[in-house]
Length: 432
Image (tube, rainbow, N blue to C red; front, top):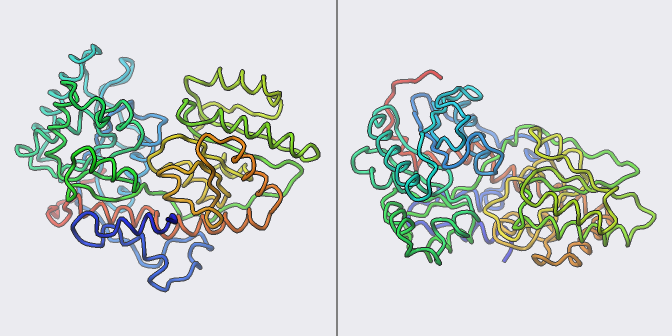
């Protein structure tokens, strides 16, 4: 099954209109050529104003944060604001040094205090969020929760009293591996309580085919599950890489075992051995609990002098523009923002063949895939791109065209409007 087939498969799965996933087939079926993509532009047509739409975004983690889900929530809020909507954030006060209220990038952010005590803290946070929703229910038209956990369950329990349509987003790995949707933990008291609340939310947003399958296995109703992918800004034309003496490979993301950066280091060492006359370098952006271990691995492999550790970065666009090849070696993903960012910057991507990655990449067309955990196969795919600049440029162009045609923020926002019940929004505007 190709990446396009996986996305097209989502059509009709939710039991409502095909508009939810129209983007999955429009790029090939509506006769539109790729001219807009090549020009770095959105498809023609001015996006409708959302003036008067009032949204509450709940981020169930440290916010602002450096994770993909937190970043995606902020980018979506910016896209909505640019079209006239009002967006406000609420999040747990994960760190006691955070202010209870602040303005962040023009958005009001309110944080809920809770005791940082296992089990007790979770229950208290759910109660405080329920109260917050009840008190503020008339200020908003809809609630969108990013990362499905305690806040989503609390909103589900309060749905009948608040009247707010509730959409909760499944970000990917976290919820299913040790999170509230981990089937191995479904009978634990807190997880059982959370699952009961989740049954009462209006919509569960899934961003990949594999995630939908896991949701069905976890007992969610087919009609609850709505496929709306992550969005990305496609308005700027890419800056093509400048051919130089060195070829730069890169990774951007958290440094955790599940991200597979150790596999990338092994593959990079193999690539260096296979190309003694070629100058290769590896740039790794991000931080996390395995950073020291990875740096020690680079020393052991003898590649430390060719690896640049950037730590956490803010300007990801400049990072991707500095690369010739991007690698996503993860063992589990939702719909990886890093892959989408690399593709929109027209960089060739090599990624592990897992759900999320293979929703975006058809090997040989929009990128290259390798067997998850297989450093030898990853090094072979890197070698193909090193040896074949024509392939490198071709998959990079096709990858960008895919992102522009299917994942632009205007299209994603339009799909989310059906979940927000925008037809019920009052005409009263809210200035932000």
